[in-house]
Image 1 (cartoon, rainbow, N blue to C red):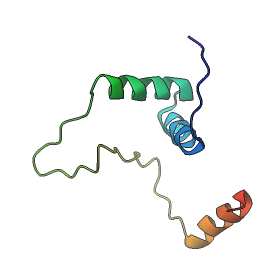
Image 2: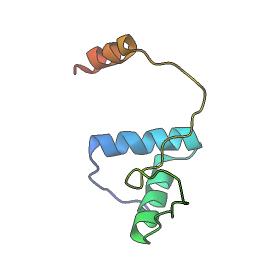
Image 3: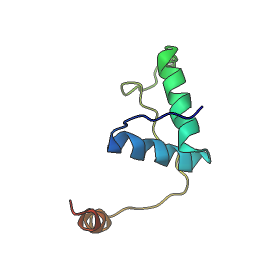
Length: 80
């Protein structure tokens, strides 16, 4: 189904990044996230594990070191 939603820029960027990492479309990822949120699909934490407000960190695609200089360059490109 096709519809129009107003999604904040940072949320859309996060959804697109998840989609890229999972090899899915952004629409599919947003649908999965909404379905999970609406169905109360919070994952149960195992004893001794660390939970950060329900956030699941990205899977590491390949180990890369990101320097402050690289971050500054990206900020400059985006005018931040």
